Every structure is written in C-alpha cells, then in structure tokens.
Image (tube, rainbow, N blue to C red; front, top):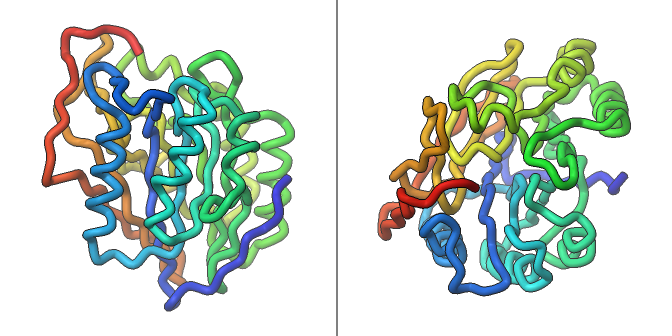
Length: 274
C-alpha cells in the first residue's frame, strides 16, 4: 500500500476540494452523451481557480478517463497542474488501473491513499473497483487496510473516501451499481468511533445525508449529471460541479457543492445508456 502523506494546513481547519468523474477521452473533441468532457472539466477547473476557497489538497474520486487511454490520464495531469495543490486519486469503474499507476505519479499527482492532515484528521482512500463491471466491492485486503489505519490513529477523526455509492439514489438502474458489500464495510467502521464522514462520486449527482449514522456525501460529476428518483436511465440539466469540504478540529464536517455559472453544458436527452 502507498506511503502516508502528511501535511500541516494553513490553520486548524483542514480544507479539501473534491472533483469527480471527468470521463476524459483520448480525443478532446469527443462527447459523452452530448457533453464534451474535456471542455466541461476545463470549465470546472477554471471556475474553481476563480473561487476564494483556499483548499489544502484535492481528492479526485474516480472515473477520470472513459476510454482507458494514455492520453486521457496524461491530460488529466496537465489540466490539474494549475491548481498548484497535491491531487490524490482513486479508481472508478471506468478507470484502467495499470495506466493510472503509470501516469498518475508525477507532480502534482500523489498516489498515496492515506493522508494525515494537521493534528486532528486522517483521510483514507479506498479502491472499490471490480474490474469490468459497474458495481463496486471492497476486497478483504482493502477492508483489512482500512481497519489497520483506523486502529493506528484512534485519536484522529477520519474521512473515508471511495468511488461507489452507499445511499440509494432512488433510481433502480443506478442503484444496482452501488457498493455491493456495504455490510462488510459497515462492520469494519462499527469497530471504531473515529469515523466522521464518508465521501464518494460515481452517481453524478449531489447527495448530503447519513448512512449508518455517518455523514455521507456524493458530488456532481464534472461532466454529465444523472437525474435522481428515476427508475429508467435519465440525464439531468443541472450543471457540472465540485465540492468544498472543511474538517474541523472537533470532528465536525462542513461542506458545500458548487456548480459552474459562466458556461452551460446540456446533454443529449435522446441518447440512452452509459
């Protein structure tokens, strides 16, 4: 498992930025369900840089590239460089991990999956990918590693990050692609009292709620948005976005989702499938 990353934030409040599901292609002109993913990701990054939120690190929570291309991953690296902050990643169901390992190890990308941020917090990034299928599962190795890190740092509040979702979206087509062994995940977490939040991507929509008593957050994709509460595949006209997160010394999490305002991306509502 990757080495631990440590940093001391500017103040006691740790500030995180989450970007998720860019779905980049080898060809920058290619569209996903009517949206040019390179352009939408570029716009998200542009508007992030115009904000005043002074985040410490960036979490990129999977589905970075749609077509497993070297060019897609290399372009992701180049596109996030202007953020001028360390970027940590985990794989989504569309990602190809050999390419991720090969290309996502150069500055500002950091392959560490365990972050000690300041004196009070740790962030643990988990791999929920099951290669070749949309749904997720945490392997015995991942669950054991999670348990080890939670046990090693009992005094630190913990944010656990993965790609696949836990809370239902009330969309039958999407909820079949959730984390399949959520009960095993819950059994590990229940052994500790230092887990304060769970963060994921995957569902291309905003969710702020509670799962098993843990504050749970999902974040809009930087490209297409999926419509919630829809049994059949459906796209939304909400705009691409990102999430800002503040981790307080007392274990409190404050967070907000922001969406782009200075450009409009509309999907092709007549296209089906994903």
